[in-house]
Length: 601
Image 1 (cartoon, helix red, strand yellow):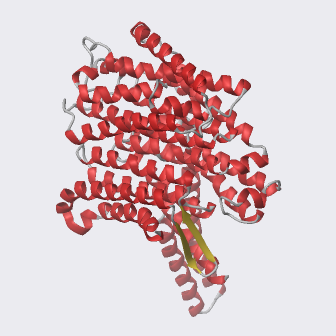
Image 2: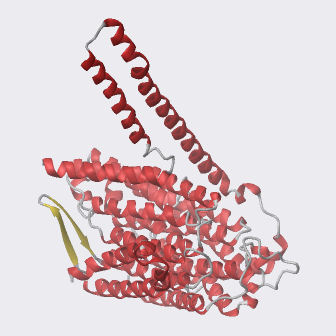
Image 3: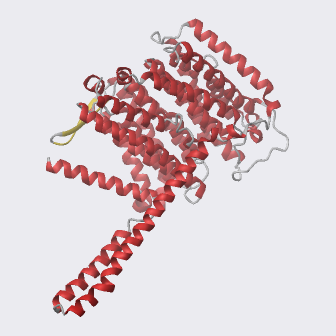
């Protein structure tokens, strides 16, 4: 079965890379093959995920003698493997038949991203997890900035990249501290390093990395800009996979959080995000912005579970959120393609114009609101099952807010069409939703219902029947109230909430400042190189001539100046000013460094 596990990670990576290279390999003829190849690969990956979840294989990887790693599927990773593969298939199905340019490239990047996520959730040590984590960051940057001719989308990708990179530094620190503390194995970090100073450093790095990747406070703002990316990328990255990686990592290392005393801080960080970002979601006028803010808030419940030890509840919340949010992002994408807008006022009544998508979106909105018997009703309560006192009250407030913003989506679906609504504000809509898109949202809607029913049947979940009933009744009351009153609040939104409490501008400012500093350093570097080239040329020969130095030495100095000038030209070539080339150079340098360390061991 180890071969199946290897194939699970390798297949989407290889097929994705082939799709990206198709213009070179097969010219324009390869474009037609992109749709069946990508959907076929995603279907095969889902089949492999089912097999690995049932058989729980392990795979030892020996790079060179003395340097090895291991992939494995256990109870926790099995749920995430199924989630990643289960979300990838409908997203690919939706992608290949959606309008717009670059579908082949988009499908290729989505498959490579899927492979990276599968590596993250099956890695059993921090080193392999870091490799997958880096690939997730790199491909997410490419996916968010997929429409690279539009500067705003590229800027959003850079902001997301820089913000998550800032958090990712923590994972590098964690790997170093884990090595110093006795080993990088995820299941052995706590027992070997527990109680030591290295354990404190390791867990601090892991928490920072997880907060950044899962868009928790104070890193939440990058997810707002990321909504400029294509809808399939939003559906896969910002619901089921990339943002879930941080929550998964914290659930995985809960023993380390508990032994070092970081568990309480993690739980409160999640509760604070659920409340603060819940208010942001409630205030949004843009459907994708509402869904993005709600993603931050919903993942806050997962962090509460990771901090309080409700591991099974946290996993259920992750899976339920993945199904629900993938569904809602694909519905939003379908309407954006058909109506040319994602403005909530303009979309009012869209469920009546597109009934099939409307029904699916209504299922997703009710699940997001926590209405029984749908996925996030039981998932949210299971995640909060380990909390008590003030932490539980904060979580309950977050749940009430989730019912309110879920109801706003439902009001858009069920409400009467808005007279004079301005459509085609983003682009000219097709006024049509294709069959693949309908199949994708129908499958995810059915999955959202099934997860709720299966989760309710799990006997090892801690919320009692009474708590579930009260939570469900409260959600229904809030949903009914918001749907009835929603039309009265049109246009009444505090600017600070639209601006994500200023977090979006803060991160944009940090990103712009970082790029300005980098530009200034590059300019100073250029001037330094130019000065070093000019000095020997201007002064060297003259000085030697006046002192009567022999001709061969003079020619040597001239050759040195010429060589230095040529090296300067070569040295300037990597300084493109483009973020992705700098990132590629950093990766290459790390590979060379790792190879050198291996060879000199």
